[in-house]
Each structure stands twice: as structure tokens, then as C-alpha cells.
Image (cartoon, rainbow, N blue to C red):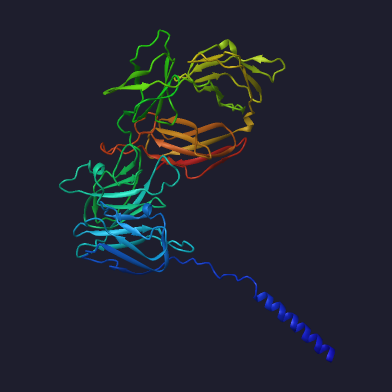
Length: 536
């Protein structure tokens, strides 16, 4: 009995010690705070009328911070002078707004903070917080909603400004180039917009991807979208439209020397068929070549160097004409570099080419060989060569056999560039695959309109792989495709010129519509994939 009691007490002591140790462990800290800040009060109160104050204070139930408020705060109508907001970079339980502008009479103002107000610890967002007041006797309450997209970008384009300009006695189309709008909203993190606290009236509705955030349209840097018809408020209609980059008026910038024998011109607008004439006296053996840089508004003027401190140009196109002078200082020319279009595998549908960083002035066909090394007796393959208009790409077209290895030989001095520099001997080893290594994608396009179409096949990074032009909706096939994931983009080519045409605000012309197939197409080797795509 006594031994049992001793054992019981011993067990009790050990358990008590273990419990104490457990209690002295690291605390769990409780549940994570997920509740956003809560508005306590505002002075003057939200929805105040006959507003005459120069300062507003908005109080919350906890310490808050303003995050990216300069980008996310949208004030409608936009003031000429931005208000001063605090706190900046520190936490506070209230926001102070100091108004720097003279407010319009009988006008409802809305300060939409978006999700820029967060709590100090966990940064929980107070979504779509808005403070509203009126300098008149009532709060305007009409609204307008819709969606804005960019047809040339598949992903969501965020932060598009949507603006209303009031039709009045002084209204002209040029107002968007000179003045801020009457009302403004922003799509923030989606493509949807809603303009609120609007007054009854007639308006012009536009959207801007505003590069410098000045709320005024600049065609050189901004994208624009517009509704051609007059907006009459009140309305229940939803407005869905697209933004686009207009082609600005042609302008060429002062040229600069970037290396010996290369002068670079920047430009904006349509520089196709631009003429660059050298006015400076040149030697008899002078050569020159104009090369547009891909996906850049830049032109390289290549020339054989000669002694001069500066050279003069006349740049012209249609009614545009301007003279320029470029100073010559650099003594080093660009070294000839050659790159091949394929490495390792040459796909059956592709054409082999070599590209140079400097223009080619001569190539010796006798020093270029394509050799079939798979056959028992190696065979010299006949080919047809094509030099691009820019003189920087040499294409070698030949009849490819599947599952075959080829050597592409460029013997020394096969290519000579504008500076008289030639290549060293180069050999490219490439191999073709069998037709069974590829797949086929068939797209059955349908529409109620017989519009000409530009059908583009994109890879998994939305880069253009193939392009087909057709006169009307029909079935198209993309053959000999490597396995992978693909997308499809279709342009409704209204004027049947084979390219996507942008819009014009002043001419009230919308851009040509672009449609994306709503899913990725998975293709495996030796597969035929059939998909239907309605364009309506």
C-alpha cells in the first residue's frame, strides 16, 4: 500500500514537471489578422454637401499605410493641382487630404483610393475605398460601366484610365489633347471599369493607357480607345471597347554615329519608303545600305567610311523633308558576326538562313555547300539562294529529306560585308526529323461575316510561329508542327491588306478586331488536333 502511494506521488510529480515545461514553450501567437482597416469617421463626413473645406481627415480603427497611392488614387473630376496626402512612408490612424485646387461649383467629387489603404502589420487591403463630397446641394449618383481591353495583348492590361468629356458649347475633338476630362476612373487590376457619381448629360467616352499619367492624350506615347457614339446619361448600357496605339505623324530624330560606318536615325510614325540621301560629296566607290532594326523605331544607315568631320543628309517622304548633320568621331567598325537560323535540328517546314550584323555586299556561291552526309555516298545538294532587301539575311532553300543529316559549309571569304570584311570557314551540322515526329493542328473558323482573316499560330509564349491569310472563314491547317502547346490569334482583316490596321481617333476609325482562341492547344507527335473557333 505504501509502495503504491509512493509510486503514485512520483508519477504525479513527473507529470506536473512535464506540464510546466510545456507551458513555458514558445507561444503560438494566435490567428493571423486578415481583417482590413475599418472607417471610423471622416471630417467632413463622407457624402457631405455644400463642401467648402481645404482639408479632409479620414480616421480608421487601426494604424494604416498608403501603398502606391500616387498610382492608385483616382480623383474625379481630376484637379489641376494634386492634393497633398499624409501619411507618406509612415503609419497613422488617419489620412489627411489638403486640397490645393479651387473646386468647381455644384460638382460632386470622388476620391477613389482603390486598394492603396492597408493596415500597418499584415497589409490587409481596404478594397475600393471611396470618399465623396459635393460643392453643391446634392450628390450626383449616376454611373457608367463596361470593359476595356487591348487586342494586341492577350494578358490583362491593368491600370487603364477611362474618361468622360462633357459636350458643351466649347467642346471640340482636340480637347483630349489639351485638357483633363470631366470624370475619370481606372480599371486597376482588371479590365472592368465603373465611373460613379456622374451628372446627367452628354459625353465623349475614351480610355487611355496613360504613359506619363498626366490624364491628357499624347499620341506619341499613349494608347487610346473610344466610343464613337455620344454617351447620354442616365443609361443602363454597358460599353465594351479596345485601346490601340495610333500611328503618329512621321518624325525623324537627329542622327548619331554609333560605330564607324554606321549612322543611326530614330523615328516615330510610318517610316516605310523613307528616303535618306547623303548630301556630302562621296568617293566613287561609295556604298550604303539602309537597315530597319526589328521591332524598334530605329534605322541604321550603313556606309563605306571616308574622310570627313561630319556628313549631311536629306531625309524625305511625301510632304516630309528635313536636313540633318551627323558628326564623325568613332574609329572602330563593327566586326562581322554570322548567326544561323537553326541549331541541331532543321524542321522540315523551315528554311535555313544565315544572318549578319553588317550588310552583305557580296557572296560567292561557289564557296557555299550543302552536303547530305547520311547517304552512303555524301551528296552535294543543290540550293537556291536569296539575299534579303536589307542585305543582312541570306536564305538557302533546298529540297529537304526527312531523317537526314546535313553539313552547311561556308568556306573562307564566302561572304563579304560593306566594310570589305569576309568570314572565316564555318560548318553548321543539322539534322531533319521524320514526319511522324510532328503533328497537325486544324482550325475550323466560322463567322456570320465573310471577312478576310489573318490566322496566326502562337507558341506557349505567345510568339508568332506561323501565319495564314484567307479570304473568308474556313478550315485552315498548320502542318509539320513540333510537339508543344499552341495558341491561335485571328485578325478580322476588313480591308484585306494582309496586316492588322490600327485606329484613328480624329478619323473616328476603330482598329481591326483581333480574337484569341480561348484555350491552349496541346499537340503531341504524330497527332492531328481538330478545333472549332467561332469569331462571332
